[in-house]
Length: 315
Image 1 (cartoon, rainbow, N blue to C red):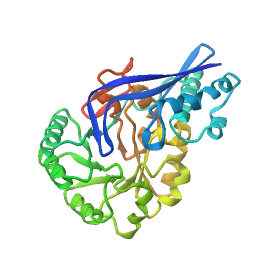
Image 2 (cartoon, rainbow, N blue to C red):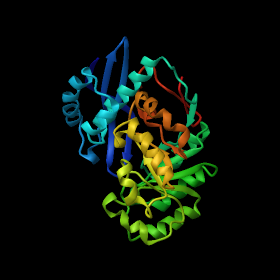
Image 3 (cartoon, rainbow, N blue to C red):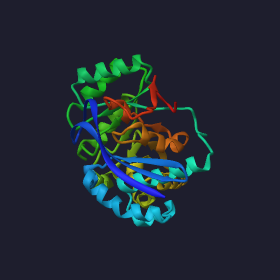
């Protein structure tokens, strides 16, 4: 067995703007694991929100490459690295290698539905983006919002796309003072779900009122260890492999969260098609899928997944 890791930078076709700022490229780290004539590949997106950088992820991975050569397993990896981007890349590379080595071949669904994200912009620009998306067959729109012009932006998008299902992602940007009233306003507009409105450190406030629409934990939920704290605060959890530290914990989190009564969402970072392929086994187990990360790239990895009419196709 041999393993290597390296960084890549993928320019975006347009700026990706959320409450924390704008990004113009996707910086990823790739792990390749080779042995018995096959190579498994994993990819992660280091996220500054969680104290990660390309450099820190590469530093975490380097000591483990020799352990892979000595037979490090996915089960052993879970205790060798904490949940995060570095473990995700290696875990998924090992899982990909195992699948290819077994010769089992692809057995999942040929396509999965996905939301299309609308980044923060003026109400008029977001409405235009919504109109363009639904014209291409998109059925679910995910609106990135900060704490400004919330009602105006949602109203503009709803008018432009009256038949679309809307989900809102505030990325921890909203204050507690206006949250309850804002939730009722969103519910009246037919919004299907609200994702992480409050900072993870302040989400105890969610226990103080009855939610008129489901609220989903993103930054507040990384692994199964978070679930006890989330009960009574959230109805749904967003599973991302870069948070769980790979597909191994992601599948376990999905099982445990459903057993505890949570609905599920599958999300992604800005990434290439490699990262979406790694998350594919979760696709049929969740209510909402946010897998449009590669659609923001100016150019995707080869071979790319195909995105069309609100779905992503394996080939």
